[in-house]
Length: 200
Image (cartoon, rainbow, N blue to C red; front, top):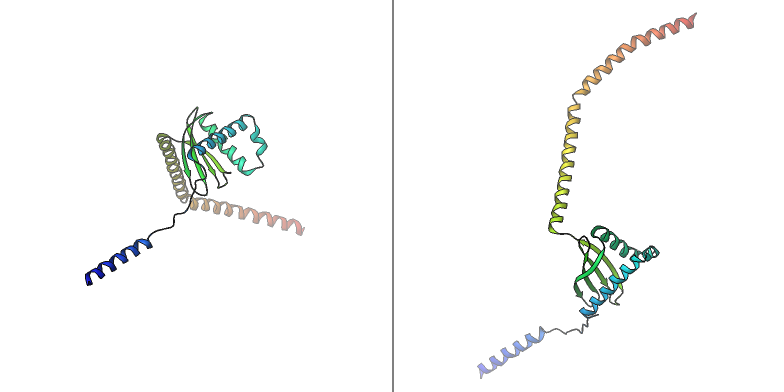
């Protein structure tokens, strides 16, 4: 009987521990489906390109959000050429926002359009960036390294010239002292002549 009570006590403890670990599942419904998010990205990118093609982006310079969207798009398109098509999507859906990263193909390269929508599916931000290849990134890093090293060596050479010029300072001071010594008797003689003229 004692063993039965011990087993029952252990089972009761185990069931009690499993109940402590359970969580209430929240009812999280997605704001949109992945397919709807892709369609929204198509629509937003289409509207951006249409408005820029029609020159309507100039009318929205006073709106900070739209101005930033058009500026980001135009800067990227200048770098990678005219927009051709959307080549892929990456969709991240949470309870308070939707983020769609659309890969785009352009004439001279590729880029990404990062679209963020809030919980009401209103546009929070749209950022367009050029996608750099590994070779382009390495080229940029090499140029930055050369520029940095070149600047350092130029400053070092300038410091060497300044330090070497310190040996000229005593010579310049000696030359200036000689000129002052030569001018002193002349000015004394002039002052003496002026005093004689005044006394007459």
